[in-house]
Image (spheres, rainbow over the protein chains, first blue to last red):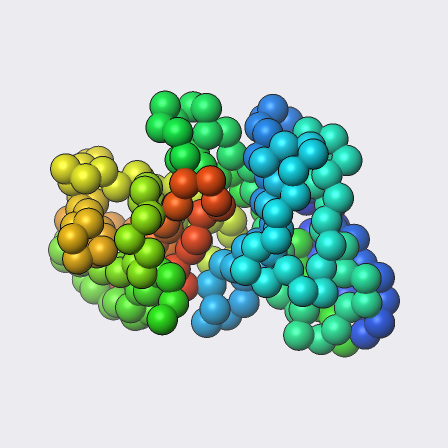
Length: 119
Length: 109
């Protein structure tokens, strides 16, 4: 089983619908992230969480919200989906304590991605 | 100016070739640096960290020039299996990783 699991893996929805992408991890990492990837734009950070009580906006948080329900779970919501939110979404985790370098995020471990299409 | 910039390529090389990718970053406060590899339709995975003194892992060599805010990745003796997109990644203290758009490598026989 994957250490970082995303559901659903593929979703097609219509404009205006509410969508939730879920991420769960068995790595025991405190830090979790949501990125989106678009052709030609690379990976862009949406939100990140350094622990259960910590939520931070990333580069492109508008139109998205997140919930960190537990150390192992971090969900991404699109309250009212629009076509330009069509993208591949990745959840990731990290454990900076393993790096021995304060301030280093540590290696990111990604889920397999959730492909979202908004019509 | 984007925080992390890479030449998108594609780089098309024959097996056995040596190929180099470059990356520049804009924030001088950046503290740690990485190369990730992403295969088509797959998640990115860490290839190697980049240390100030330069570091090597088999056929892969990474270098960092803090004064020029420049990172490089050299691949020697390219294999077909090296075909992928290589992502330059930068970390500032207390924030999440920032990814470049990636450089695509295609190795042919």
